[in-house]
Length: 140
View (tube, helix red, strand yellow):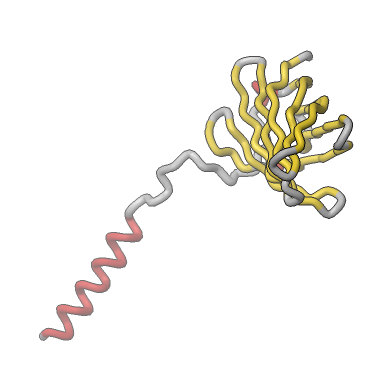
C-alpha cells in the first residue's frame, strides 16, 4: 500500500507541474525581428570606453528595416565597425528592448537596443574590453 501511495503522489506531482505555466516573463524567442513601429534610420554619437580608461567619441548609424536585418555602423578615431544583425539573432526582452550577440573580425559584441519615442539607446560590451553607449535620434 505504501508503494502504491508513492507512485500516485509522483504521478500527481508530474501532472500538476505540467499544467503550470512557468513562462510568465516577457522574454520572447519568436525571432520576428524588431517591431515595425521602430523601423527607420537612427544616427548619433556613441561614447566608447576601452580598457576601462581610454574614452573616445564615435558616430553611429543604425538602420532598422522591414527586412530581416538590422545594420549597425560605428566609426571614429578608435573604431570602424559594420555589423549586420539578422532577426534570428535578436531577442525581445520587453516591448521596447532587444538584445543580440554578434561576432565581427573575431570580436564578440553583446548589444542592447532600447527604443523610446524617436530615440534609440545603443549599448554594447565587446570581448576586447570596450563598452559603447549613445542615444541615437531617428532621422527617417
